[in-house]
Structures are given as structure tokens and as C-alpha cells.
Length: 228
Image (cartoon, rainbow, N blue to C red; front, side, top):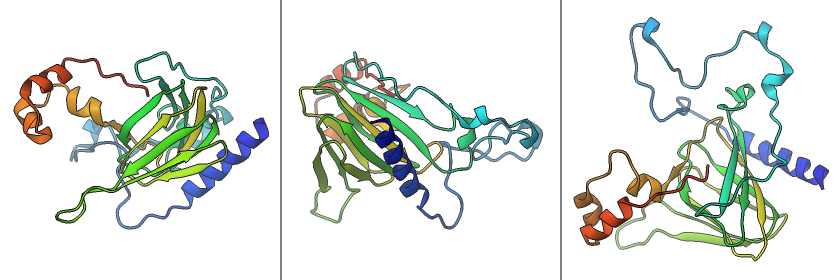
């Protein structure tokens, strides 16, 4: 079983790394404001590089993906991410990985990765997955693509599109995902809209969702769980 996991993870990363890029390199964080004084520079598009003479094998190693995440939360899911923030050797390589654990009927809620396409492989359980296309033409609705996944199935979520995974089975589910960025980012829709700091004006949200402001105020008062 361990060998099957390893082979499939390698296959996922091979697909992800085959994606080509053109024009300017994609941003690797939400923003990077220009500054003329290099002494005041804090971040670059990615991370500063370690002196090659100081690099060791440990810079390319991270254990622990054999351990299940804690799904005892409101969503019944846990995402264990491996990206440049916890595996420094991924810097500039354009890939990252995540393990996603689901309790029975657990949900990885609608979210987007602004900087990465996701390739998800299911190892245990049964998942209902899907993504929604960007805004279509006039008098058209955003099209939803969904699929029921079983162990061994693979599904792709294109970069930037809203997507989700829901465990429709009565047992736990485990999936692994490869992403085409060292830091793909994640925007959980409900958390970002109703749990932002400071909060978005209830006038804005009431009009956008066409609901009463009391409903907006109630939603903004809730605790929005982050399963990442």
C-alpha cells in the first residue's frame, strides 16, 4: 500500500510540473509592493535563496504525511499542506502537495487556489467533488462540473476556480493533492466573505446575496473554521 501511495504521488507531481508558463512569472504571494531602497526590501516573488554551500538533505525533506489530520471540527476535514512555507527545498520548483482527511460526511468547503491548479487522487473512501466555471456570458449561469470519486480516481481543479470535496460515505476518506505552485494560496469562500477582518459592509453583502442585513449580521457573527 505504501508503494502505491508513493507511485501515485510521484505521478501527480509529474503532471503538475509539466504545466508550462509564459510572460511574467506568476506571483507567489498575494502582493509584492515595489520599493526603490533595497535595504528596506522584505519579500521577493518567492523566498530568498539559501547559500548552496549551506544546503543539506534536510532542506528537501519533510516527514509526517502518513499521519491523519484531526477532523474533529465543524467541517469534519483537515488539510495537511506541504509547501514552501514548511519545506524550504520547494522554493522556485513550482510544486506543492497536500493530504486531505475527511470524517464521515466531512467537507472541504468551497474554496479557490489563486496561484495553482490542483490534481487530486483519492486513496480511501468516496468523495463528491466539483468545480464551478468563471462568469459566463449574458443570461448564462456558472456551470458546475461534478464527479463521484472512488479509491484510485483522479480529478483536476483548474487554477483559480471555486471547488470543493465532500465525503458522501459512512467511513473516513483520504486524498492527496498536487498543486502547480510552491505557494498556491487558498481562499475559503465563506470565511473570506463573512469572516474577513475588518468585516465587509453588511450593505454590500445584503445587496450582493440579495438577503436581509440581519442574515448577514448573523453570518458575520459566526466562527468560520479554517481546516488548513
